[in-house]
Image (cartoon, rainbow, N blue to C red):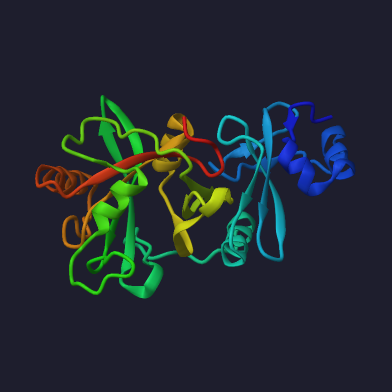
Length: 268
């Protein structure tokens, strides 16, 4: 009997008391699972296990995760994201590009955001990081000028200018990183008027990350997000070169950052 399974109140409200009780007594719970976050095996009889319900416009998928990775929660995603998560969980997801970046159209179609994953050494510890750089200047919504307001817009959202990459960014409340099936699906931001989280960046197809990156996420429980204007970072083939590019961007005042928990968890 899986006595270590956790069904949160919000998950229970979505799936109903009857199904929640069946899970808790072991009728519908798996004997083993691959954690939807770190992608390593779990056993609900021996590991504290969270039920995670991914809810799209038309589909809902119940997944399981180590409670040490993410708590039991409901994660609202687009139907496209959900289908991608299902493919990742079942192992049917196509492989992303080898360069480690995942372009995404930003609102208004002004540019494409590229995201690169890497490990950043801070205080002797490796931290999982995502570096965001658009392919063109980002104009403020409603403006017709040629200026680049990417960093000011992010600072208004709570990102902090970085002058020293040896310091850990502070946690940005309400934002989180959606990792499902051990792959990156989205960076989520608070919705308007108290609504649920919405995608700030969303992968066209799930972005694979290295085993080391997943291991670092499991340890730190948060992801560092660095953002810089177009042309500041570029595609770096190695993590040491990526760090050098971040250092140069910070020195020139062209870098902002924030730390984010895994999807659905509140800022600390």
